[in-house]
Image (cartoon, rainbow, N blue to C red; front, top):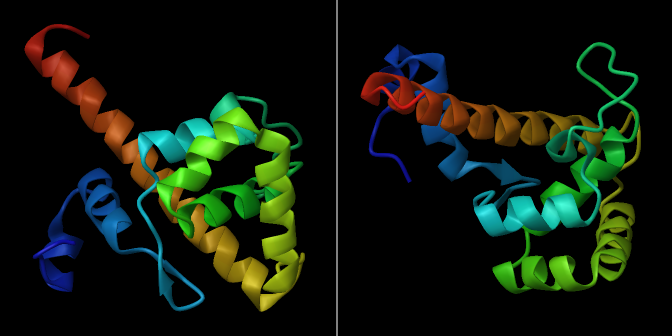
Length: 145
């Protein structure tokens, strides 16, 4: 959790603000677990297109298969890391659970739940990009980039 108030957070560069804010994301009123390395690997294992570089048909920030990606990532972020361990070993089983979970919360195109889910998913990836940007920046500053 961050000790910065909203005014201090707003004064930070966008990359830093996104990275710090990622620690306090919620979905449907519940705090999400961080999108840890294990969850990122699990998301790739269950077929996340964005993490795997397989995005096609992108238009207005949306892409083919995005709903599946959103459901998978948010499902993983609502579960303990043990579910991410399972996803690496049995991806189809975990994706089936993610789809059942998405159905149970009414995650369908055009729903308010979908709108919130896509917004949270976007914030997760903004934070991930911010972290990657920071790593590149540090490498450049140290002469290793």
